[in-house]
Image (cartoon, rainbow, N blue to C red):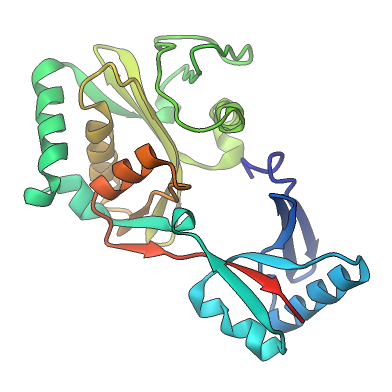
Length: 265
C-alpha cells in the first residue's frame, strides 16, 4: 500500500476473488489472484490482457507457484533477479547475535553501549511525536520534535513520503513500531507488521552519527519480538550494494525468491 502511487497499484475485489495489478518499467504486472480456483483466475487475466492487445506479466510469483501456469496450459518465460529476494532471519539469532558470524555487529553494539547511556526502546505509540526526514525535506503534517534532520536514508523520495504517511496514521496501517532513544532523543525507528510467524520490516531509519545505532536497533527490536514470532523478513535489497552488505551482514537463514512470469502463449 505504501507503493500504490509509485507502482500505480490497483485492486479488484469481487466476492471471494482478489486481483492486484501494478506497473513497473512499462510492464503490466499482476499478482496471482487470490481465489478458490487460481488457475481460472490466471486464465481470466490473460484473456483480458489479450483483448487489450497488451503483453501479460505476473509478479511476484513464488517458485512453488510456477506450476500453476503449466496447469493453466501456458508457455511462459521466467525472470528471477537476486535483488528481488526477500531476506529471512531467525529472530532469536538476531536477538542474541552469538558466535563469530556476528562479530562485526557485536563490535558495533559494544561500541554503542560504551558511548551512550540512558538508552531505551519504546513502543512507537508511546512517543508523542515521531519525525523522519531527509535533510532537505520538511513534513508540515507532523510536529518536529527531538529528531535530528541528519537521520540517514537510503531509498528514493517516494519511500520518504510514504514513510511519513505511515508515521502520521499508525492506527490506519495497523503496524508494529519502535523508537530508539538516547538521553531522551530519538535516534532510530522501526516499523513493520506481524503476519503469522513472521515480522516484516517495512521502515527502518536511524541517525548514523550514533556509532553502532543500526546494530543496536535490530538487536533490541528482535529481543522484543522473539516471544511473538520466529522469523524476521527484512525484504529485498534491489541490488543496492550498501543494502546488500547490510542485509547479508545479519546472516539470513534463507531467501524468498520471486519470479517475474511473462505469458508467451
